[in-house]
Image (cartoon, rainbow, N blue to C red; front, top):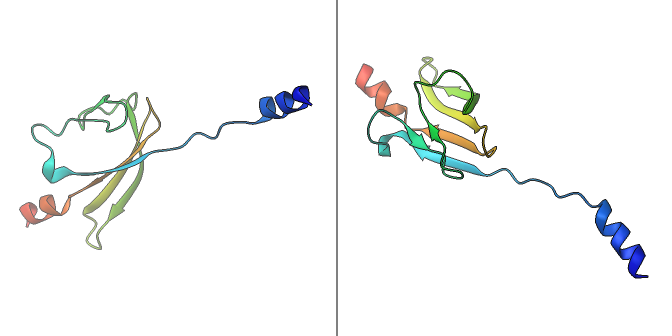
Length: 93
């Protein structure tokens, strides 16, 4: 009976959970760099290499200005949703 239990247990696969975080850009100081809330890798808006993160979704307002940006951290696979682009929209007006 014990061997049967072991073989069943070996056959199970762990599902990886994806963490989702929301970051308000208005609370980020400096040049816009921020650490991933999960693993701490630095995410920089100046990095366009896609080695650290990848843009996976963009939401826009009716006028085409940016509402939110969703990123995938390539180190830990967390999803980071950047919000607070409204402030930039007001500055441009």
